[in-house]
Length: 286
Image (spheres, rainbow, N blue to C red):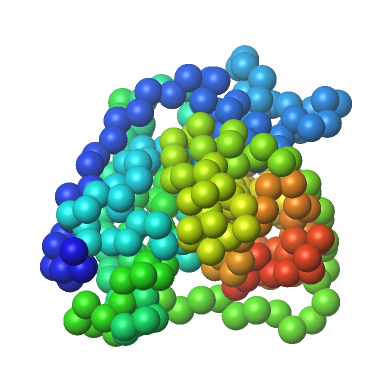
């Protein structure tokens, strides 16, 4: 069944209430490679329970997550061919390591790029503290629907991306991923088999399962947190970027950073293939 513009634009994405335990915060951090150095005290506070424990700011991307709702046949989407396109997260308050949060998701835009060219789906999710009603974060996604163009929808507006610097980066930071990283990351709630099933990955055109785009996003956020925020998660404001190419678990992600007033521009590459995997990155501190 092809996409029906109005149906997908107004699709009822379920509201999610999520009870957090400290173990959930620890799992998210571990799924991004935190803790590989057992002597790194700045990192250990993201994986160790207690009063000093903190949640990584980009954990917002897995909070109140409504699941792989685009696999519902009623959406009209070819779920096998979709990939993460662009991502943004903005923090308004420190994330809790325990308690109950509410995720309220909505479709904010749908662009038809034409037959054979796919479509762009824009969504947003507000993360609220259930006890106080305070908004903790907003998560914004652009999903590339590679198999779904030509359904008669509008050809815009298309989100404008941050400009990329044309000078050498001021800061370069390499962070390794582990071969089993995608299998751990999916325990945060994203069970898309593209990241775990070799046969399905091959059907989608990849030689092996790829790392979640949000896994790559999280690894790069660790570099920004270290380089721009001096490891202080309270300074983390807004991060946005485009996913340019997939990362295969086990590769090294090199984040290149340019300082800007109030934040930074950034991009990321995989060292082993000298391939840009994140582009048009913009970061703002709080």
